[in-house]
Image (cartoon, rainbow, N blue to C red):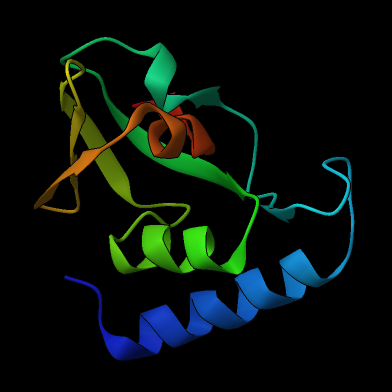
Length: 107
């Protein structure tokens, strides 16, 4: 479970990353690494979050509160009709759009 200190630390990092425009134009981007979109994997995938790419502060906050932070472990338990993911031992259902904003690498 994420502690309030970790959330604050990442919130500050995301806020700074979203303030300037990068390769995504005016979108909020945390460039923690490359990877492939979580939505592109099939059920049973296990790996680590490497990057988050969102287009608003609201979406950024949503994903952060779910624990979708670079470095956290993630597994894909279901991909239809919704994406059911397990992030650091917490299970959530995401729509395709949010699952496409989370970049991961196997491991």
